[in-house]
Image 1 (cartoon, rainbow, N blue to C red):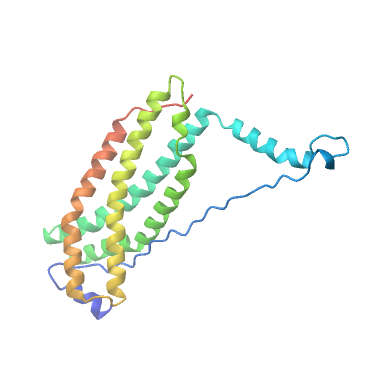
Image 2: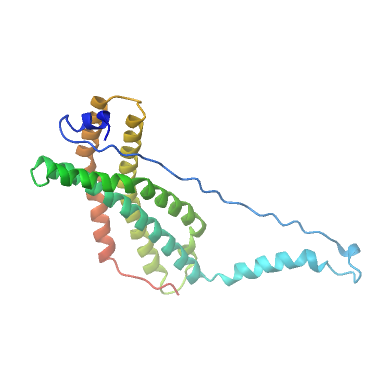
Length: 230
């Protein structure tokens, strides 16, 4: 550990230096199909098979997605966002709790440093997975809105609870991302150890609000009834 990093841990409580990366470079590509041909181009006087086939294929694929399948896709995609957000929030929770326990005498300095190191090293991947899950979720948005049968109300209720839990854990994950970015800026020399320590203490003291909200949302999800789109 460098002298600059050790200096932070000597001021009002240890500080982990985290290298944060908010990796979210994910692009979507659109494909345009140009229909070529006309009645005059076809020897039989009928529309060209080359022109009509892509449109028929797209129509068939669209019809193949049933309302149940669309809702299942949205539930699964939202669940994936929740899983990624909950993992990131969980590492932030450990990171914050390590300082709490150190100050209370429940952790040794060595144990605290191990927790800080493990969680900060996991941080960049936490944020990358969450960003990727959010992007993937967009393609399935509105899937459960197509349900009209007996399962519609239950599945839309389930989806709402999933979305609430994903948002609550996402807020805690955003705190984690902000802390990682702050530590990266300090490591890059953007500001000194004293300011870094002040930012860390502010983040630590304010972390419980979003972490507690995430915990409540997770409990509500466990207690919520499941649904089976049909």
